[in-house]
Length: 218
Image (tube, rainbow, N blue to C red; front, side, top):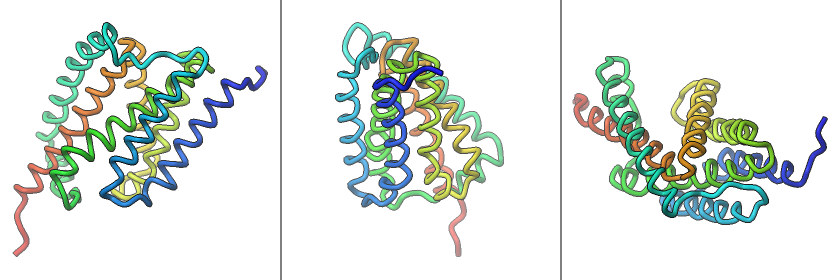
């Protein structure tokens, strides 16, 4: 068995801390300040991870940035189109009509999703944990570590939405695996940022659209 090095310990500790934060602390934050707090935490972790030995760069500067934006834009368009296509299914439309929307929809669309969800999660999981995990366990091991933590961190979301916890953890873990693979391929965090943003915003806009089209109670 390989000895537990300092790099491996840091990676495992960060994964555990991120999971605990999302499961225990984040649900207790006030709704209005949650996006800002999340973004600050993600940004701080991303900045600190750059000092980890052997960790990869975030690729948010040229020329890696251009590669990430090109690939990310194409993948984001495919993802958004797929979300729109699924609304043709009656079951999907019904689920969207029944989805409980936040009280401040504009705040959710313009700040909550881009800053409080997409940036914070990509910075923390793909940027920080992915970097530290890759430096400690290699590409495959680091990707598995961040995907697992990403899936487990969505347990509160599944419970709040009344969705199956195991299914949510597996689905978000798979998404985390793909987003990390996309970052590794493009060498830029821009690619998973664009895909994540397209997925969440397309789903949110579709939910808003169908919620407003649903019959109002008399």
